[in-house]
Image: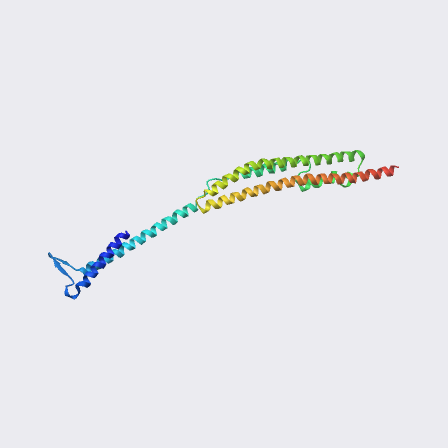
Length: 238
């Protein structure tokens, strides 16, 4: 198209130069074979045609740019074809189930208060000999159960690591092959969700381990208090 415009401009300039060379010695129009030919009007028509072609070329370029822009917008609005939400929710649910299976002293404020009032302090450390023995055994069972629960939660976290690894691989591949901004953003959001799930598992493992350690420390403190009570009774008996 540009070649056509250039040829038209060249013809117009040639016609203009012909008119200039003729000057006043030649008429503005000539009659050849009964047809009137006006070189000035002919040159003007060529220039008009050239300008029209240039405008059409500019409009075609604008339409091509708009089509490219629309195609890019369509790619940017395309959703990510993969989702790991179901797998992540399953992992969180499994960890919560393990925490909910806590033996004896559960992760509940009221349950903890009841257990400590019954076995770890106050009258529980100064009752009858039989009651003291029973409470000591109950405290030992609390500690053993808590350590067992902690190991279960840790085993569940380790199991989740395999699923998490697969999810990360899927999301990284999807992010690298993303065709638009929306897909890249969705892949990034799902990777953040995987990290949140890992933090949730870590918090669960720390909580279970902390519970076992606190119950064992409470058992040691109760045993010490119970020992003092036994020694006091022994001295009083003498």
